[in-house]
Image (cartoon, rainbow, N blue to C red; front, side):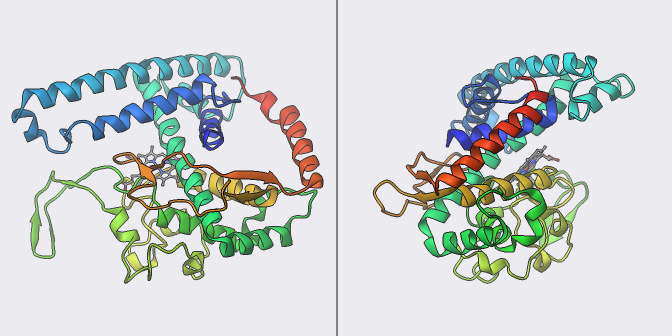
Length: 357
Ligand code: HEM
């Protein structure tokens, strides 16, 4: 579980700040993990006061409970995000990681009259959006692969038909691994890591099914319900990647379709505020899953299937993460172990060395 979080968080801090998280106990990784947990508690331990402000007047205790958690949340955020932004600025000023998102934000700072705090938050939102959620999706996929040996076998055979023992899957293999892409789509549909998305507000009056929805109303999209609709996805609790055979494109190519039947799934939301990170998410998931399939035999320590029930195997009020579970990863053979070590050496020399920590 820790590897998934380290990987997803490190991709984001590298892209945004030019800073890697080389180990799970790196402050960049543990920092965002804590923030996402406390942020989650904000929704779990108190009633949804942001969504229903009227509740604030029902009991001052509710308001105090929220403000206390909110304060802790803000403190954690302010300290990590300032620290990372300051480090990124030093790197930007020294000409390091010129392609990092921080470089673009600092370049535009004066022209857009951004305050320091606003810069911190602009940089942080991508870090927040792309760490925990991606890690949770990778974990859900691992759970599915170990519980559905037929799928694991089929995906593995596809990867092996494209990559020999000396060659790990790469992003350029996207077109040649259609079944792995279906596995990723099915994971996102089957256990969406952010099953309600964020609140949207109506900017004009609307009607739906005879209901009038006034301008300014908050609308929450029930992604979970759409993804589990048996008319759309027969036998929806079954992990069955083949249901996406007629959806060969990437998530970004389906998200803007105005015809709901031409959408693959709704896990990245809908409309103008849909997830802006879905391209990175597709890449993260495709690469991590195809590489794991290439490298490891996966099993459970006792040979028993894992609990994958959304009620008992996952936790979290709006960000759904798998509860800790046990899995065994065994490198498939010596030749693959040597390739992994060689890849690591190349990455250390050519990639990792370009980033701070
Ligand atoms: C499996 C991975 C991911 C899933 C399932 C996911 C899902 C979502 C969903 C459901 C929303 C709300 C959309 C809506 O209400 O219509 C959202 C918003 C957002 N996501 Fe993602 N996301 C993922 C990865 C990422 C990544 C990698 C990034 C950063 C690069 C990111 C950044 C954001 C941001 C900034 C928002 C807020 C957008 C706004 O309010 O306008 N997400 N995401």
